[in-house]
Image (cartoon, rainbow, N blue to C red):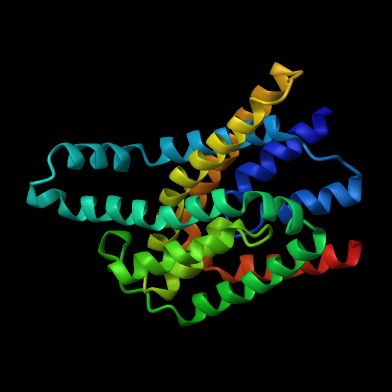
Length: 263
């Protein structure tokens, strides 16, 4: 990978992991336009690891509260936090189980440019519907079990390239009555176990490869992805109530059309 490709990978991963757009669509479009080859598993792991560090650093206070709540589960003031922890676990199980079950099928049959372009557009329309019809009544701590289950099942669709995990979870959260900020925060919190599972799975795959590692390139992708991801989370949480989801819907529709045009 040359310098431009390293920088592009880090920025795209940092931005698209948490914004309700599709990282797959961006990477496919760039590879078609510029003729870049797939970045490979090692760079993928490095980019995801950077995003994981970013979201953990951003939610460090909330994660500390979760640890304290688990150490003292009987305290009344910890019940909302424990409910959120249980919800994150419950909503994560479907995507992890389905991902392990269908990983090979998805890699072989769903990573085509046509599929990615289609899902980029289709799930943008779902996001638009949720943005317009969502009641915005609750925060992430007050989400009912029905809502948690719905978000968990919806997150399975994020396994389809082009759907966008953050986009799917924000859409489902808005449909279940979360405010825009709460839907974003829950989506980011759900990314922690999801990214960790993806890194673990890809790291196990790497064990079977003879790696010729460019340490500087790997660290650059990791650092750039982490810095961009942290800034992205911080800005998005502050601005989502002002800008809403429609700018991202429009962006996704344009991106999907461009993909079809280049295909």
